Each structure stands twice: as structure tokens, then as C-alpha cells.
Image (cartoon, rainbow, N blue to C red):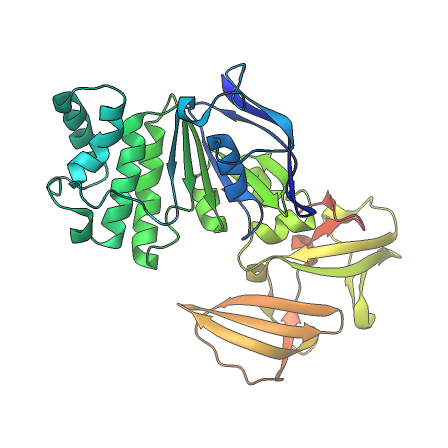
Length: 353
């Protein structure tokens, strides 16, 4: 059984917030929804929860219309980016609250709440108030309350976005185990972070400007992005995309640069194409390679990101180590044509490494 959406569409002030969105979300699988800010992720969650009305389309849960159900009859639990807890209740009663609302006795509700708090590593914090907890602990309380409900549909709207990097990494590892226990629920988790989407999801959905562009297993979406938009969204930094052509058995780039035709491109007809290459697959080369001018460089941890302007467009390189580059410094860039993605003029993928 599943949650099935068909042609969900919402337009506000001539802007499409949802543009003909269709998907099937199965019970027992963790679905991650990735997209940039304003991609439509939160609007989609609000539509599922019943907090947003749509212009057209259908949404069915286990064969029955979900849109026809009033909000209070939808068995939906939602965790927001900004964690929401009841400040006057203890941690234990925060988690037990939705169980009491469903008619469970105080003792049973608290027993279940204690079990879930232990799963999110908050044993011993039961009698504290939310104000006595760190930000990460407060988000765990919000997660525990949603998990305790055992709702048909569990929606998580960038729940780790406000946590510091170290805590976010720790909770990513824990969340996978937590959600794997929600076998009877439909779980949809939104994020702007490619690594998070790929790490957590059994199924990844990619949204951009209100449209659902691709849906599938993480490795399929990463290895075979359906469009240039998908390729930029699921890579961090975004995949480099440059215009070029295939002519006379060569890859022709702007500025008179050419590369040998890669193995996976054989059989493609001559014509204009767009070529994609991940930043991590570009390298600093030798004098015989393509030359570019540094427009910006930044160090992130043990890696350096170099922005280079070439004769055929800007490129971003991700290289190991801490390096310093002067503005406008000339650097050689080595491109491995065997790692190039090829997209048609319509931005659809036509060949992948």
C-alpha cells in the first residue's frame, strides 16, 4: 500500500509552487526529497499534511482520497526545521502528549514515550523542560514525539538544518536506524544537502522550481541524473555544465579547445551538446592542459574549492589539501573526457560515464 500523488498543481500569483507533481511513496521505505530553497519541498509536505490546498490533482493513501480527509483525520506526524516543543511540559510529557490525545492512559503513554526517548539517546532527561536542553536535544524531543505516534505518514522538513555540523553528522547516522523501525509508516524527509539525501534515502526524489524531475534509488539518481538541473542539485558543489559539440570524432569546447571522444560517447551523432563534470573529478594539470584564471578560491576543512574562468565557461575544482591561489592567477585544468556526462540541447541526459 502507498501514498500516490498524481498531477499535484498549485499556482499563487502566477508562480507555480507545485507543477504537475506525481509520485508513489511506499510504506516501509525512507524517501528523501532534495531541492534548493523554494523548490517546492515544504509546499508539498504541507499539501500532504492538509495545511495547503491545491488547484488540481489527486492524493490517495491506500486507495482512498487523502485530500478529502479533513486535517484532524489525517494520521500525519510532522517535524519542522525549527523544532517545536511545548515549553511548559517535561520532555516525557512532550513525547507522551500525542499518545494521550489518541486516548491512551497516562501510564501506557508514558511507557511508550520512555521507550522512544531511549531510542533517541535521551534517557535520563525525562523530567527536564525543553529550555534546559541543547538545540540538538530539543530536536531529538521533536523527533521522538513524531516517532512515538507511529503515524501513517511521517513528514520531516529539513529537521537537521539548524544543528551545528558535528551534531548534524552524528544525527544523520542515528536517523537511518530510527526510521528503519517505522516499517508501517510512509516517511518523507526533505533536505537541501546532497550527501544527506543519498545517505538516508532508500528512494530519492529531486525537485526544482516546483517540478519533480527524477525519482529513484540514490545510486541511480547520482550516476544517471536525468537532466542538467538534477545534476546540479544532487552534487555539492553543483556539477560543472559547459556548452560544446561533437564534431569529427572530437569533443569541441569553446575557445578552440578539443578533447578526444570518450568511450561512452561513441555512437552519438554530431551536433551541439552540454557536458557535465563533477568538481571533484577536475584536477590541476600541466602546461599542455586547458588554462584558466582563478576568480575565487576557498578552503573548506581539508579541501580547497577553486573557481576558474576558462575560454568555454566557468569551472569549479575540488582538490585535496589546503592551497592558496591569487586572484586572476593562471592555472592549468585537466579534464578527463571519460568522466564527462553528456546532455542534449534540451538538457536531457544522453550519455553517462
